[in-house]
Length: 252
Image (cartoon, rainbow, N blue to C red; front, side, top):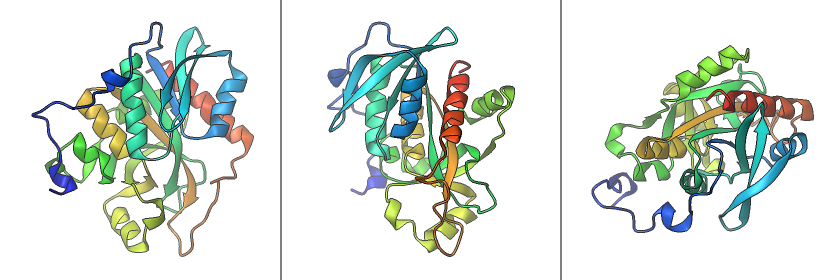
């Protein structure tokens, strides 16, 4: 039986997230998720924080709480890739998270999209495995991101320029070939990353409110890969994304 035939909504999970994680008293309903340690450090350095829980994912991941403009917010540093990111989120939801905002970098599939531009994914191409356990293959090659419109409204409200478009989610960062890149571009994708389809399939299945914005870092729309901002982001830009995330999160 191949991966596209593995979706099963007729029997229950053997290992449920509620068997590993438990409800945490006072856990904030709003949760910010980042993929970058330096971005986490901005959140830690600029706010009064406390550790309120942990998640074990090959290592112990602290879950922090802060108060921003009188609203309690949880935040943490997640891992790279759909399977682990989704597994951690499953436990965060059990702990009490209800409105989750994720943000991180993506590769650009359009060289005209400037470095660091904010992109709100509207559909995610399923070039990974996790989504097929949450949404059946016959639903299509793309996962629709039903929270995208609301996120775009919030960004507009706070005066942050952003574009909306399709993203390509892949499990294999070192197998993004030129041929596949062109195929994804023809399908309308403007970015590539490693979590969106997985996360949004889980959100659909669990009926969870998960929002995500990306910022363009490296460029794949070229003859030779361009690193651009990847691994070389100025601190002021990093702080800008954190401010945006905080302002968005209190409006979810």
